[in-house]
Every structure is written in C-alpha cells, then in structure tokens.
Image 1 (spheres, rainbow, N blue to C red):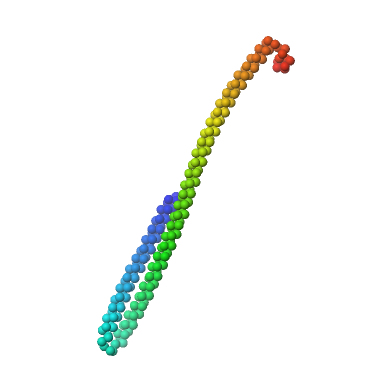
Image 2: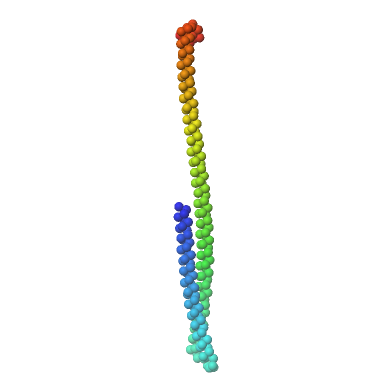
Length: 183
C-alpha cells in the first residue's frame, strides 16, 4: 500500500512539474513575442525620429504617433515585468511543492521501514513462540511418558504388595489381623 502511495506521489509530482514547465514555456513565449514587438515599435519610433529630424517642423500627427508608440512600449514593458514576476512566482511555488513532496516521500519511506521492522520483529516473535510451543509439547510428552511409566511401576508395586499380602495371609494370618490389614 505504501508502494502505491509512493508511486502516486511520484506521478503527482511529475504532473505538477510538467504543468509548471508548460506554464513557464507559455510565459517565456509570450515574453519573447512582447520583446519582439517592443523592438519593432522602438525601431519604428527611431525610424520616424530619424526621418523627422532633418525637418524642423514635426507634424502633430507624427508626434501623436510617437507618443502612442512610447505608451505602447511602456505598456508592453510593464506586461513583460508582470510576466517575469509570474514566472518567478511559478518557480518558487514549484520548488516549494517539490520540497513538500520530497518530505512526504521521506516520511512515507520512514513509515514503511518502521512497518517492515515491526513485521520482522513479529515474525521473530512467532518463530520464538513456535519453538517454545514445540519445546513445551516435548516436555509434556516426556511428562506423559514418565507418568505412564510411573503408573506401570505403581501397578507393578501394587501387584507385588498384593502378592506379598496374599503370601503373608496364607503363611501368617494373625499378623495381618493385628496390623489391621486383613479383616
């Protein structure tokens, strides 16, 4: 289960990184387009200024065009600045998420290692219990065998006592009556 979590985390982190890389690529492309546009606008302004320099009278239409171009350049420069800020924020967020994912993966690995250790300890405990149970069974078997042998010995002793009693009763009945063995 932790292996699935690790795979899921890796897949999610790769998808997140791919998404940020795509956003960065889009922002870089847009920035490049805006820089090209600014360059062309600046070139247009310079060309118009060069053409207007020889003449002392600059028409008001040219001045308006120049002002418009300057405003567009400023606007595009602000857009570029904004896009650069967005790219930096995306980089920072991507790094932060990557660090969080690494920490999570590290934590999950530590948990997995802990579980493996517990599992190994549990297996060792089961092995010890199985060995202990086998030893206890052997001891019980030995005790049962000793008990059987004792029972057989007891029965043999009883038979011998009964035989001796019978012999004594036949040979000397008075002694048994005095001792209270024979009634």
